[in-house]
Length: 76
Image 1: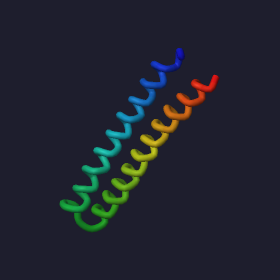
Image 2: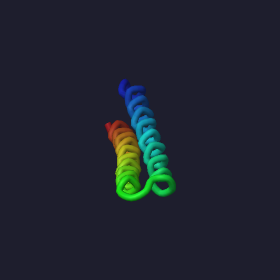
Image 3: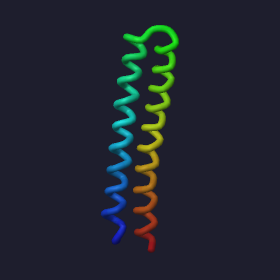
């Protein structure tokens, strides 16, 4: 039970980072598809997709750790 506050803080921090990564990815995607031309546009789109996927993975890890640790503590 002593880990509950730390677990929530860690989850919030990871979700904050996931949000920042998603926002940066969306901005790069919009710029890459609308403003940039040539190779720069492709590089921005690829980086945006990588940022969006990383954001998704960070969110998934945060959720899974919270759910599985919560279940494990209940069984003890």
